[in-house]
Length: 212
Image 1: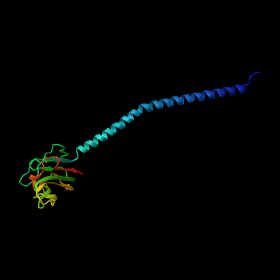
Image 2 (image 1 turned 90 degrees about the horizontal axis):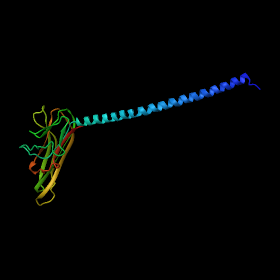
Image 3 (image 1 turned 180 degrees about the vertical axis):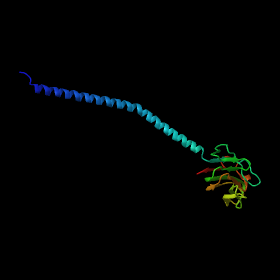
Image 4 (image 1 turned 135 degrees about the vertical axis):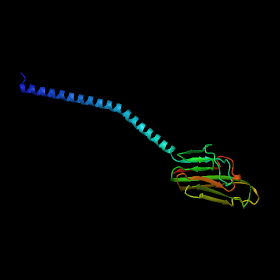
């Protein structure tokens, strides 16, 4: 019995459709493989760029921190007739950065940029014979070109810290700190009324400022 022409044509068309479907699936599969391969090649580059961006940001942030006006000076180098303290700007944890200059001639920290700063100072004194009348003053001043005399920024008057009646050695301290507006070329310095009683240890006495 012979095969009808229409039936043979239908079978042929079915075979063609099957082969076409298989060919399309093969094409799609190969295309997906190529895209996956490209994605794997591109991803490390993206990660590298991302890492570079992060490193670059951190480096920029670090440079910005380094350029920030700040200083911390420690120790006691001596005093002049006006009781202005001298400091060691590079001993221990001492440093100056961001345009701040330590002036050896007058013990001042000079700022070279107008802005808002946090200024602080700590002193520690040991009195050999402390009594109820023992006291001292701790002050921070600024010398400004537009003013004929120094401007007082902060002051502490310490008294009554010796509670015993018998004159005995006694150690006490004073800390001053405040947010202040400083002008370009201002010179900030510290005065103490009784500098001879300052403890001669670097960490006990310090002075600094930093731009906010």
